[in-house]
Amino acid sequence: MPLQSLVKHIFFDLDKTLWDFESNSRSALEELYHHHQLASLGVHDFDLFFQTYSVINDQCWDLYRKNLINKEYLRHHRFFLTLKNFGIENRPLAKAIGKDYVTLSPTKTALVSGAKELLEHLKGRYWLHIITNGFEEVQRLKLKNTGINYYFQEVITSERAGRRKPDPAIFQFAMIKTGAVPENSLMIGDDLEIDIKGARSNGWKTIWYNPHRKFDPDGGIEIQHLTELISVF
Image (cartoon, rainbow, N blue to C red; front, top):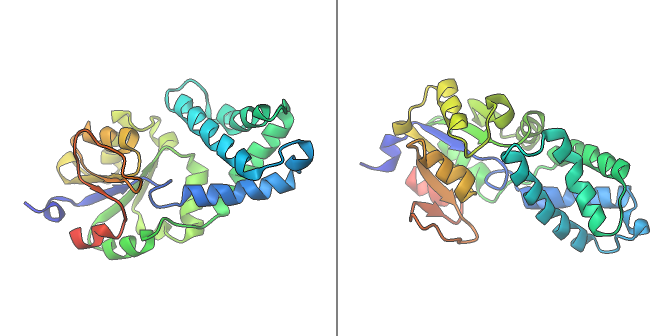
């Protein structure tokens, strides 16, 4: 039976799937790099600063998902470690940048190529939802500021659910809130371990948004561009 006839509820990840995390994060950090005059403190290369932060941010988010650090610690500690890498051990500065970043980054409005086109195509055909590990207030601002909030019936954040992907509990919470069941649920996301394997563990159908053509040993359905789904649905 065709996939589109089985699916009623489509759940999207937000960051790196619909919201262009790389572009928006870079733009916000470049503003903060200049605002906090990091060059004068010895951080002379913004590109290196951004690359360093990106690696450390991923590591800190992994600790957060494993409940090894909390939200508030994550927000500033990723910047403390980044600055420390440049010889700057200044926690007040890290906290100031962390606070400013959480305020500034959701105002950035770049979407992943094809996101708006796909959502417009799916609107009215399926129940559309967000399921994300991002912070509640930040993710809702991203949706509002990019103008895509009205496409979604439910926005399930890890804070709201009390669990983080790939924990099965967040997917179960999503089904309770939306009335979905595994047989009619589809997850679309960019992270194989967190989005795709997490959803599969609950019996959901999945489509991996995989623009970098990484390898999936399970050989599931994947796409390299969001508009590929228009012909599927």
